[in-house]
Image (cartoon, rainbow, N blue to C red):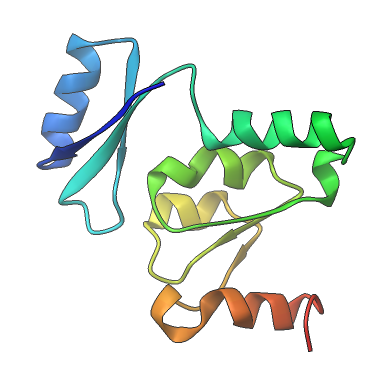
Length: 117
């Protein structure tokens, strides 16, 4: 699998996907660029493979994300948590929205769900 970055707006990202249907362009939260990945590759597939290997039910997993490259893993994890600085579309897909990453969002979500004290 190869990954590359795209610098530009959403219109250019959509045009790139139309021209190259084998890729997906995941916009960053700031909407000034994106990760470009093969459609068959995703963080969600990585989580699925880890769960299969370690025999962990997906329902017992938690995923954090702030960009659209996290959309699939947020949807498939047992609990999908979007950072407060995430794009609106990712927040809608999440089970929970925490504080922004630079305001201890991961720690605060872990406290909220009783994962840490």
